[in-house]
Image (cartoon, rainbow, N blue to C red):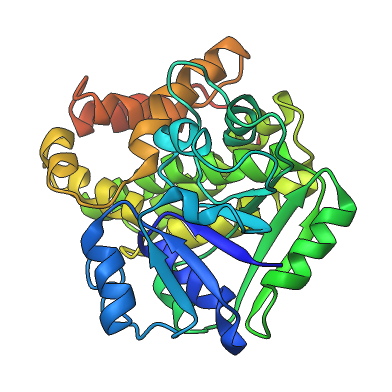
Amino acid sequence: MKAGVIGGGAWGTALAQTLAAEGRHVRLWALEPDVVEAVNSVRQNPLYLPGIPLHAAIEATGDMAAMADRDILLIVSPAQHLRSVVAQVPAGTPLILCSKGIEAGTGLLMSEVAAQAQPASPIAVLSGPTFAHEVAKGLPTAITLACADAGLAARIAARIARPAFRPYLSDDVVGAEIGGAVKNVLAIACGVAEGAGLGLNARASLISRGFAEMTRFGLARGARPETLSGLSGLGDLVLTCSSTNSRNFSLGKGLGEGRSAKDLLSNRRTVAEGAFTAPVLREAARAAKVEMPVVEAVCALLEDAAPLGRVMDALLARPLRAE
């Protein structure tokens, strides 16, 4: 399979690096001309993935028409831009969605958005516990590859698998997507706990209770519990709730330190998807009559609707209940 990657950020570049192992040609589309120039001339992406030498088999381009000869396309655009990006790619090409989020305004998952924008294209989802710089360095990584078409999933897995990059197959596309979307919001909550000095007990509680929220919402949307407890759910949740390498955790840490969401988001070059997903997820959960108090608390902090102390008091004052 001739592979292409749409999106020249850290994760897109890391995936191109993985796909280009053993000298296999990969074409990387980037929006920024500086990224295209740097990848092709000095074999680096200093803007988004500094310090990582890139394989010579990666060819960067800013021309979407150059992706017409690709057999598969990995879509790594920000979630809120996925619809417009997918609408530009060649029709009928299998799309592997690597963006995590829920579309604002529609409440659709990324696979649902892509199906509307390119109805002729088969769709798969790649999601799991992955920090881009570790994948780019070739450190061991396992990830979920979800696709309704088992034959296509097997062919994609054979193309993207590496000794240190191991895809596990699933046909639960919804479950894989919900895990990736919800964990971003929960990572903000854990970052808040870190920034506010609430301790490791609080973080562990947020991870476990947040996972319960993810499970309730996922089951309401048709996900399978084993998917939510796997790499794309619990695995990704643990990773992003544990390190400032996570953009969402880092955002939450700033909120916990008393900085405003507006200032934190305006100073970022990269996207903290959880900030955009949180209000959409809140509305989707309310519509499904699913309780998600941690998600509600994150929304309150992002919207400056209440100070941290009041938000924490509200969480801790919830009625006692069985686990």
